[in-house]
Length: 455
Image (cartoon, rainbow, N blue to C red):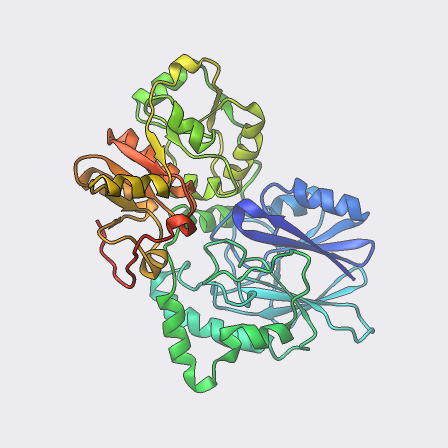
């Protein structure tokens, strides 16, 4: 038995392909199935079975497409309501995939009908590989508030029980979750540095709080787990309905002209500049918003742009368009406009950038800049600048018009989110300074912690 783990960085997830040298099972594939097909081709194996551990809330599944393209069985809990053919499986069933035995284990918690898949080589006595999806993760568990807020605590109790049930398996079993590597589906992040690192159930007995909790303290664990959940990206609520309908191939992008870009700006469409945050600050099309292309791009585009609104992507590097469009399609955003910038004379809008040394210099002159901290609640609580205003990035469109008059110094932890925030505020007509520096460079600036005061 061999396991190939495929990192899907823009989703903060991992897909797994497990095979016997000839036939393979694929667990939780992304929408762009070419990633999986390339891995299977490189290994010289046939994709015989595809499985989703649950109906996903954070991305569009590629399981149905992959199964149809390869004539493979698609395994999904028989209790899930979907509008397409699949092989409904239940707890305790064993599904053969070539020489491998796949045992279905009910692990409700992350979703109501979540399942994990334990794969073994029959007759060897060797420990198996556990594909746990959003149940037991590396150092944490999947969050339980994405299905229905009213079920959050009930599912958290189920998650606790499911994780402990998995820990009763052979402790040498390798643990291979889908979430926990940056996805907001994880309750917290605890990522091994190497996707190929071997993490076993025995490791989790030592490192995972859900397994260290005494049974008498289940309710305390549940309370702490739920209290620690962060915000939910707004596009998440669209993912499960898409996955239940059975998403097809994404609609291709449409090329837009310079004149159509101008029309999009005037119509209030989201014109997104994929260039670096430095280039955007130095000069951009008035009315556009800078979202530097990176592994975080799709998360924030899907979060900040209201679902269904028109999007036009801008870049001066055509090679960036393909991965940006792919990442958007992974979360169901398709058919967007694309334009390659050619005339720098159009890029007339600018704003200032600074580092923390520049901020200290401004303080030395006696100035009292208005600081806007766009990090999340837990980051703010751990330490922030005295007098700073806290507006998490996802709230900026609503809160921005109410911020104090004058110049706004915007920062985050690394400069990336602050770059998006500066663009959003500049689009609203505000004077901004983008503090494009890391939090670690604050050095001797005093901080306060444990307070929460939104703007």
